[in-house]
Length: 103
Image (cartoon, rainbow, N blue to C red; front, side, top):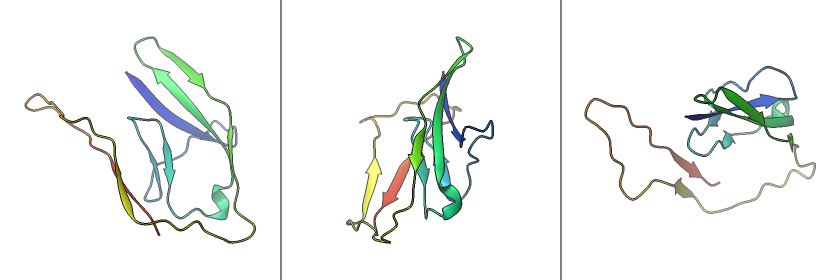
């Protein structure tokens, strides 16, 4: 069992998931919708292996705002990385992640 969390600005404060932020437990990716100035800083991914009871931190990744105010425009698309078939036992929980991107 791997789990993923993100640290903001090298603080022990973990990035809280809310209506704008989401951490994929499939890929470890951090998604931020509608970036705000308060989101600017360094993000560090932490991967935890619960069976081995160990955590590893990646290098910090800086997030900056463009000073020219230009946004990249791209066509709307839905990003899905599901396996061809998802198997689940009766009564178990399944989490499927789907992201809509575009402007």
